[in-house]
Structures are given as C-alpha cells and as structure tokens.
Length: 257
Length: 255
Ligand SMILES: Nc1ncnc2c1ncn2[C@@H]1O[C@H](COP(=O)(O)OP(=O)(O)O)[C@@H](O)[C@H]1O
Ligand SMILES: [Mg+2]
Image 1 (cartoon, helix red, strand yellow):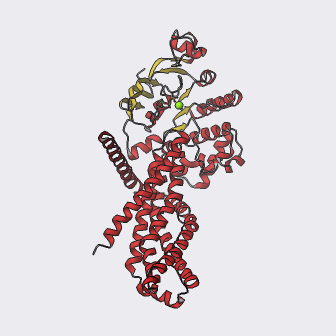
Image 2 (image 1 turned 90 degrees about the vertical axis):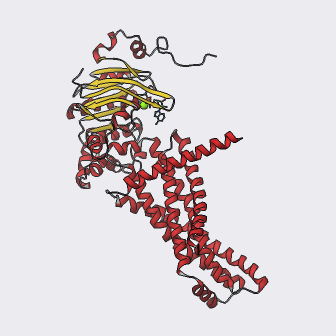
Image 3 (image 1 turned 60 degrees about the horizontal axis):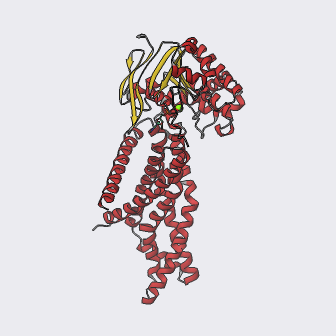
C-alpha cells in the first residue's frame, strides 16, 4: 500500500518505562475512511496525537501525502494542522466560549476571518449537525453529551479540512444518539470528500463509518483490511473483539480471587 | 537519610529545570506576535480588578494593626511621632507588596492553575493546538502580562489604603493629630520606598502567573491532578514570593 495518503511506519512511543506504541505501521488511501478498533488503553488516542504532533513519537516515520511530518515546527506546523479537523474523545469544547465561538474558533484565530463572517459559517455548520442557530449562544456546560459531540463535530469540520480524526465519537452516548452521530460523520465526510481516521470500540459504529478497519493490540496493528471482510478475516484477536468475548487470545489482567 | 536528601535535591533540581524550560517557551513563543489583546484585557480584569476587595481589606487591617503595634512600642520611648512614618515605610516597602502578593497567589494563582489544569485534562489545550492556536500565546502570555501589569497597580492602591488604615487607627483610637500624621507620612516617605514596592509587585505578579500556568499546564490525571496542580501553584508561588522578597530587599536597599 505505497500510495497511502496517511502513512505511518514503525511509529514508537513510550512514556517512561511504559511502551504504548510498539511500532505502528498503517496506511490510509486518499478519501478513505479507516476505523481503528482496539481495547481501552491500547494506545489509540496516543497514535492520533502522534500524527497531529501533539505528542512526539520516539521513532518511526509519519507521512502525509508523501511528506514527512514528524518534528514540523512554526509556520510549517500551522499549515499542516490547518489541513486537519479533530473530534476529541470528550469533545474538548472551550467552556469559556459560547457554542458558535467554539465552532468558529479555528476560522477566527487560525485563519483571521472576520467575526461576523465566521459566525455565519459556524451557524451553517451547526445546522449541518442538526443544531439550530439558537444553540449558538449557549455555553458548552448547558449542553447534553450528545449535543457536545455534535458541536465538537461542527468545530472539526468548520474549516473544511482534508483529513478528519474522530476519537471515540459514540462512546458514552445512547445507541440512538450514537447512530445519529454515525450518520452525521458519514454525511460530513462524503460532503467534504475527506480522508478520515476514526477510533472506536463500538462495532456498530465501525461497520457504519468504515471503508477499512484496522485493529490495534498492545501498541501494534495486528490486522488491517476492508470493512466487509472483518467477519471472515480469520484473525482470532479480531474475532474475539468483534464478538465481545472474554474467552480468546486477548487476556485481560483480571486478578482471580 | 542521605539518600532521602539526595533524592529530594534531585527532584527539586528537576523541577527547576522543567520550570526554566516552560519559562523559555512562555517567553519565546508567548511574547512574540501575535499578541491576544482581548485575552490580556480579560485577564487584567480577572487578576487585577477582582482582587481589589481582598487586597484592599488586607491592606486596611494591616495598616491599622501596624499603627497600633508601633504606638504601643514607641510610647515606651515617648516616640509616638514615629507611628506615621514607620507605618508608611512598612506598608510601601514590605507589607503592601508581600501581603498583596500572597493574597493574589491564593486567589489568582489557584484559579489559573485550576482553569488551565482542567483545560489540560479535558484536552482543550490539545484542541487549541489543532485549531492552529499556540497555547503559550493564547493562554500563558496574557496571564503573565496581565499579572505583571496589574500587581503594581494593586499594590499602589494597597499602599494608599494601608496608610489610610494606619491614619484612621492613629487618629481615632490612639488620638494622634490628623494633620501631623499626614505631614509625617508625606515628609518622610521617599520615592524609592514606593517604587521598590512596585518593582517587587511586578516580580510577584510574574511568579504567580508563571507558577499558576506551569502547574496547570502540566497537570494530569483528572480531577485529582487538577487539585494537586492548584495546591502546588499556591504553595510554590507563596514560597517563591517570600524568597524573592528577601532577595529584592537586599538588592534594592543595598547601599
Ligand atoms: N501524556 C501521557 N503521559 C503518560 N502516559 C500516557 C499519556 N497519554 C497516554 N498515556 C498512557 O498511554 C496508554 C494509552 O492511552 P490512550 O492512547 O489514551 O488509550 P486509548 O487506546 O484508550 O485511547 C494509557 O495507558 C495511558 O495511561
Ligand atoms: Mg482514547
């Protein structure tokens, strides 16, 4: 898969003695939607943060459209980040700003757009995620979890990014709201033609958003393939994960009494 | 025993190193364009304006207590005329800046650490970066600038209120002559007394904002981590203020 738009090669990251990423190699073709599945604490968020440069990998290479991006600084880094949108696990809305200011933040601060114009775009993006203009003047603390996720989604797509990351977009939501978010993600991605990487341990969500699925285990990608093939992939780790079974090669460190 | 001391020393040196690196980032990245004027003004309101009541009350009671003590001491030598001048000196040189610094460290240092700490653990700081905004410019620099600018103003006001506290106690409960009290204050006080206090205040403001931001920025581990960051910010800035006060007093009044 040499023609991947996003390419990770042997990316490693440790925190002190704790090895979180043990050589992640991954490839996402342009316009594709990759979903990374895996248990909690296996390094999924750390992997996204390495690609965004929020964390520095200890070694390995990360290329976007063929360009090495590890260690970018200053203007080059700002230009790089301008191509991304990110929906954080907990939405990570700025709680001192109103909803529309949150959505418009990247436009006003990052792209120096006039506030009035940025506000119009923000209201439009809020509409795309099914929120009315009146929500724009509320503050994040006044919103339910599902609404916060939608605002986070609106903020992620506000600047029409080429690449969007979704970190556990449906975790903590009821199944119906989760499906609403899944549909919004599929719609938004289609509209923008973006390349996306999503993280989840919700298989229903994965099947809905993914073109390709990769599974991460102990800091390595142990399986990657088309979403359709996941049920017949023949990988015992993947089988255990998608069936949500406690029996199998993945052993939880649960102390037996 | 020695191992314990050694470990503690190493930990302290490590912390000093990390603060220095943080400071380097804060100054190099934070104090170069672009400057967030809106954020600076907002922080000036929060750090300066809203600290006025606390600092004013502290100064008032301290000035009063000081006047009473000096009177009780000096009356043994029939030197009551010293009350006004010693209150003025004590407040402008030492108590004004130090007490205001400590009160602001408790009020503002804690709230900076709690706010930035919460932003850190809820990934808001990461979100800022992905929206192409440098958190050193957007969060840290405005707080440092606002604290350095507003603390001297606060201390200037505290000086006036503290001297007024001394005046009220001196004239009402001790029975000193009001006109003489004011003349003693005005004649005795020199520019250097006031300016040294204001310089101290600027340094204390810097310490409070840097420690608040540093601990908030580096907090991890949820609500508990934020609580720890808040405590550390207040304790470390209080200690640094007292140490810096001693150093500045030796420096400013060395002659
Ligand atoms: N900044 C950090 N410092 C230290 N450890 C971290 C940091 N970020 C993540 N970790 C650790 O890395 C591991 C993987 O975290 P993460 O990628 O968030 O897991 P998940 O796959 O659930 O998203 C966890 O054990 C976590 O404790
Ligand atoms: Mg995660």
